[in-house]
Length: 220
Length: 220
DNA sequence: CGCGAATTACTCTAGTTAGAGTATTCGAGT
DNA sequence: ACTCGAATACTCTAACTAGAGTAATTCGCG
Image 1 (tube, rainbow over the protein chains, first blue to last red):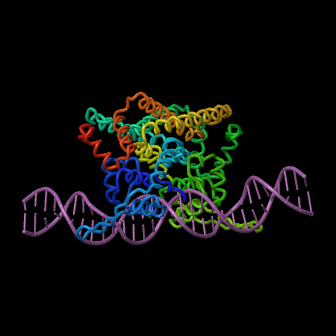
Image 2 (cartoon, chains in turn yellow, green, cyan, blue):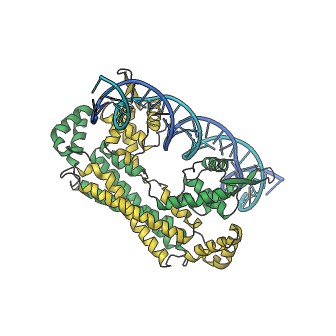
């Protein structure tokens, strides 16, 4: 029986490790602890995930309550297998780096489909947005009361550290493009000139290979 | 008609922007250009994605070929709407930062469910793996031939920049935990002591609130 | 004390995705 | 001439996910 592969399942297990809960309480608790910023959460997924954990025997329904005319709430608890799965799986997620496929990395890798001037402007706009987000985080961090355990802010700090790295990277990239310092920029510009001049993709590529092919001898 | 929300769809559009292709050629091209490192690719998704782009009118079947007894290959081309969608959507992905929900961020945010000593060891192991990956990337970069356009390596460099930021962050975290310098570490340790001593999650939480509650007055 | 907004508590559907499975052809070696 | 593995080219299924929709209850305000 394979473990489910999404962070929400793991979050459910850790919540039930604290105490038995019904799904709605799980979602409220996650929300209240601001875990929705680091774990994708919506009801559709939550109920599906709970059901799949139950099927796998990692959690079990403890009781079903009804208050007034509201829908039933089923309270779940962690099984022993669930506790083991939680430990194993959380351990793996902490220990093993796995490739992450972010949107921006994909966008960077496909950036060539836009003319360099356009890409440059877009990157500058991203930079503004990221600097703003970063300042906002600083603001929030500054208002955390004295003595509030940093432990509860690790995810946020991690995310901020990555954001800062991205800012630095994009600043450099913007600078390189602006000052004609990025290797391959001529090719990139040239292909869009050819396309703009009415050549088909195939014609443009053929010309490019003629003009710059020698640089691409080996594609690592 | 909403745009599909996955990077593979966008990759398909950019490929067809270059020239008409059949799905298998798309996958080979992506693979050959090492785009599978930045864009999640598998056949199941690819054929589904192609079909959904066709339904949306962003790409169109141009012809169906058959060679020998092999399965048919349908060659697709980009429609004008597809070209517009590609530009708009790639622009958005470059311009707008969106929250990314990585596994490690989730793991960090749930780390409390493991005792601190265990988490510490796991983080050290991650560090080793990340340093190794980073060295490997250095190695690959070093063997790129002179004059090979850096433009084709942007995604990889971006990914490496984030990895380095992660390494720095985790090094600091490991250091803070090791030297008892992380705020909230006592609480974290204490709750696992109580659990290990046989208290239920609820009892342990109650005791914790008694002992440390004053620190948590406001939960931002 | 009555009205609308917010909160509680889900359900449903359509779309997406991973991963395994299938079948053919080609080329390198024996 | 034969076979074994790699490459070609998909298909299928089960699971997962997002997002919208539903409906009761409670809270705050005039």
